[in-house]
Length: 542
Image (cartoon, rainbow, N blue to C red; front, side):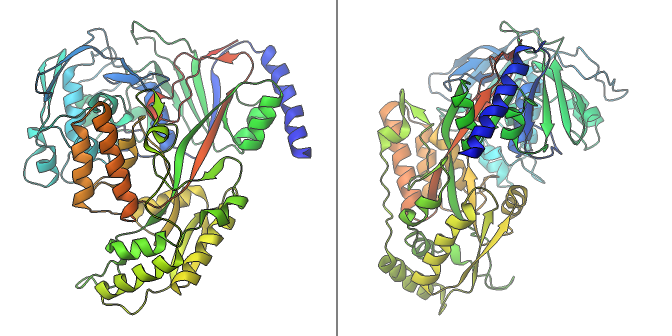
């Protein structure tokens, strides 16, 4: 109670300061340093948030997840749903930050053309280092054959019919293509400028140009300053003067309540304090914490590998030990137990997906079933028992305490010791991305408001498939969903999610609610649980 009172008093100071504000850039905290702003390749959420402000793609997402036109002023779709033709605005230009490039054939004011989108999409399919997001465009003509090494990226089904006309051909219909084209990884890339950076594109300010509502004026370890892009032309021009992103300066909630930032993602206590002081707080239950099992963990040798978590019965043995009623009391107020994957923030047909699909899971807590699955799984693997396991846990909230109950369940039900390794969030993300773990507590969030954004974490060969899953049946279920709409699409999503759970490919633990607030006198920021819809372009500060 004392902490809450002190937060309220701090916020009162903030409100007084906000009333005297003279405008300027909106101040916002990011949690970790940014090292790469290459739209096609960076996976860091903070970096992708910045990219979405300084670049503009064919489309952008509105506050309800609706697809809005950006550089594509209009488009047509062939009768068979396989050919999309986009007509681009002719007034879009590239801009820099005052640094003039002396080589490579680029200078400020160059038009953004259909060729820039062709180059961006093709470079995602570079056979030597494909983009982590290439799988999002798996239905583009020849995409899967390129990823399999059978064709050259130049054969990808994208073409510039002229400077202002882009055509994308698909092998099979994709009902979510426009949402994918609004994501940060689908931003254009100027080929001449890219080549002039000599493999350093996106790694430093001098290796970037922009076409969005803002440009990046400065980039240091502690601050990224965005300012309104003077050459940006749009039927819907940005309102914000700029954004100052402060990097790893401390607790974002405390800084917001002390008046050091104008908007922030808040923890539960800070959100309570803000609400009690009359500040409007926006919340989304848009993240799912899951228990990841590393399918690439090898118990054998390089010559004779043995991957225990590729065995469905071993995964199910662990899944059946999870007792959410045990760790529920120790979860912070922004987390609640969940047995399903897709979070409530995802809407479909005007309703939360969870309302339409239900909350039940085919996997229940049962140590008896866990033991049975363990026996059959070990037999199939030719093992007598599993070795010692280690569970990677982030050092935040009460997650280590909650993980203790997972540890106890695995140890007691399966007679396998499971240790805990507590790390900070950045190390968790780095190690999971590198496959350096056995089991891990990890948060999943979506780029766009669709269950398929969460299914992408489990697709074979996907860059965000951190477990290393390779299940052809699940891949086929997701591929099937691409072609549907309406109630048929809902049913296809339900089949895919149920399969994930029934095979132990996804072991959900809890949903996370995120809280966002803007200080008095600051408005127009489009908060969203989905990166493609989070926008500062219409932000205003008195």
